[in-house]
Image 1 (tube, rainbow, N blue to C red):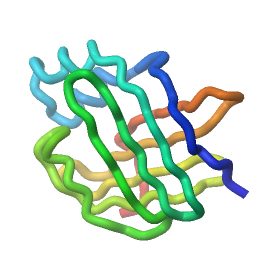
Image 2 (cartoon, rainbow, N blue to C red; image 1 turned 60 degrees about the horizontal axis):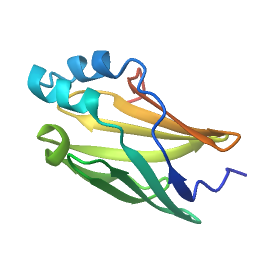
Image 3 (tube, helix red, strand yellow; image 1 turned 180 degrees about the vertical axis):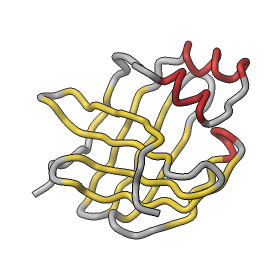
Amino acid sequence: MPPNLTGYYRFVSQKNLEDYLQALNINVALRKIVLLLKPDKEIEHRGDHMVVRTLSTFRNYVMEFEVGVEFEEDLRIVDGRKCQTIVTWEEEQLVCVQKGEIPNRGWRHWMEGDMLHLVKSLCHCPS
């Protein structure tokens, strides 16, 4: 059974984030701003329904979804794009695949102790 991720999580590090932003063709000025941010995550997790809030001094982003159900995600506030997104569980990791203008982008969340980990990637996921 997947873990319940409900909670408020403080920023610790953003390894490889600049490479990820470059691969998404995010302009230099915005990349510099993003790399200075220390975003927090607030997650509400009730069954298959989740709300993930990324909170920072620059901009907040709210993602609400049902696990296993594809939906259109409006990322214009983040990088000017829209995509089709599906979030599923792979064992104890929450895995997101975003299909759109930039193919096979996504992320993974998982818990280790009381720390929430996030890895963003351009994955080689099924289309």
